[in-house]
Length: 146
Image (tube, rainbow, N blue to C red; front, side, top):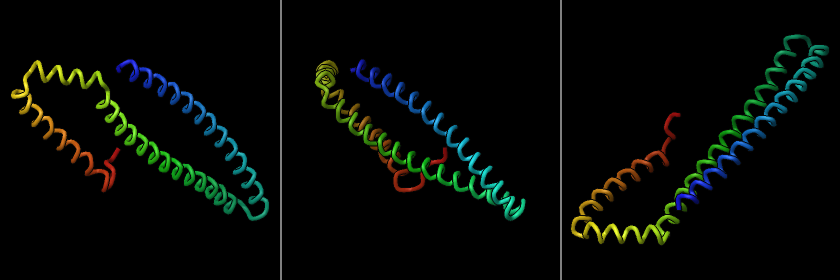
């Protein structure tokens, strides 16, 4: 069970590192491209209309690029958050369906005894309920500050 979790962690870490490297290279290329396009627009507007409008054109181009990057960041962040929530739900269901975990639970019940285990389970269920209700309070409202 733990080996599968470790292998998944290794795979996801390697994938994340490769994707981050590719995203960094693409961001650098986009920055250089935007810089040259902005310089070309600046020179064109400078020759036609003067330096003030040329500077405003350059600022407008970088503002549009910044807004596109911010919107794509927010969309990607929401996608990642939804994926994490779905993964957490499926992982919990997978762990409960694991026969080794069920067998270990039965052995714990036999070793401790059902009468001693009921109060422990009640306190654990109460703590789990409080944590679940606390975690859902952020879903409907604003997200906590980062």
